[in-house]
Amino acid sequence: MNYCPESYEGLSGEDITFFFNEPKPIHIWFYLMFVAFAMYGICIFICTLDSILRKVKARSKKVALYGASIVHIGFLVTLVAHLVGGIWSESGRPITVSNTWVQAGEYELKVTGLDSTTYPNGMPRKITAQMKIRKDGEEYDDTLGYNNPVLVDSGTKQFLLRNYGNMPNAVVMNIDGQTVTLNIKDVIEINGTDVLIANLYMPPQFPLPVLQLVSKGNNDKYDQTYVRIGRQNVQNVKGVDVIFQDIKSTPAVVVTTKKNPSIPLTLIAIGCFGSGMLLVVFRTAYKMVRV
Image (cartoon, rainbow, N blue to C red; front, top):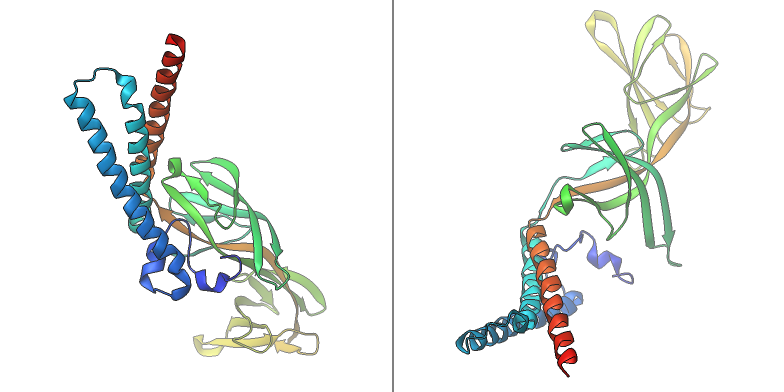
């Protein structure tokens, strides 16, 4: 995946439907692995069932003898959990998060920092976004990255990184000789008239960044003025010279929300591994003591 990232665009978390929606020869490693794990799971199920039935028929009452079987059940549940999570997980729409609070369901997200490294060919290598999470007035920090989602609700909900970069969050304008920094949708007064900073158009929509200004005109109509970036592109708005000088940007990430129904199965698997290994250890220690 590191050497051919373009072939895995859209893959996130443990979503295995990605490999079946559009099958590609480069994903043959996954199809072989999927068949191998399926055969492994079938073998575990049959062997574990046979082992338990033999002990039951032999009327074995020693709980420690079932330790290995419980561990094998843990392996089987783990495979099922990956299958359930990979197929039936739900992903929400992409959400752009920057340095202001953005609502994502019952949570609010904000980016406080963004670090990235690349390979020599320019492809992304490691992305680390510092996040602030807020719910019901409680706020805490977390880190977001590729294959490092932000987990909430005991892990049943995840915020996955889809894209990253810088996004415009303010514009610098010179209005009648005065330099001001404004946000999109701000309203300013020019020569007694309210003017709305309506929109910012970026390439490739326009060759250069263009700012759209909307003001009320005659006969209850609205006047629209487009100002291109650069001191040479002076526009007269309501009798005042307006210059679009610069764009201020802030780190931003695009995340998707994912609900994973396999978390309960994962907890069951952990319980099987833990209890099974304890029984195996107790049985081994008991044998050593007897010897």
